[in-house]
Amino acid sequence: MKKYQLFYNEDYCYSTDYNLIVDLCRIGFVTNISQPLLKYRIHSEQISTNHYYEQERYADKIRLKQLSFFLNTTFNR
Image (cartoon, rainbow, N blue to C red; front, top):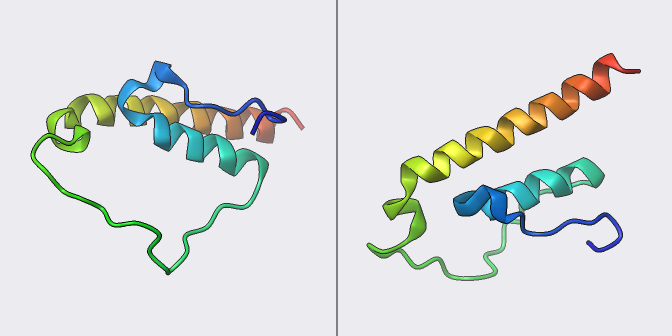
């Protein structure tokens, strides 16, 4: 990750994981695996519950950033 300067970008406060995955997709192949590696605990204080709208706003910014990257890559060839 250091080689490609990938890190959690705190500019995307409630969507840092999503941003990291999107950035990883630019440099390599990313896939889901069928075997669970951890248990997901659901509780009333989790970020996706308490900050849903902010999380979606940051995710939209990430999607726009990714779209811009692909459009610039496609049209600048």
